[in-house]
Amino acid sequence: MVHTAVLVAEEAAEHASAISPLLLGVLAFGGFVVALLATYAFRHANNKH
Image (cartoon, rainbow, N blue to C red; front, side, top):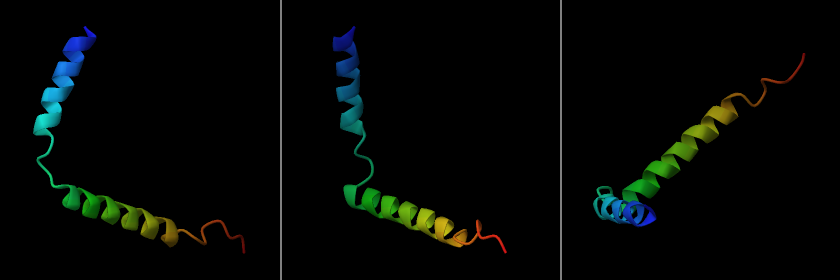
C-alpha cells in the first residue's frame, strides 16, 4: 500500500515541473506583496476616535 503511494508520488513529481522555479518565486513574492498591501490598508482600522 505504501509502496504504491510512493510510486504514484514519484510519477506525479516527474510531471510537476510544468512551472519554472523562477516563475514560482516571482508569483509567491507577488502574493506576499499583495498580502502586505491588504494588511497595510487596514492599519488604522482598530483606532477608536
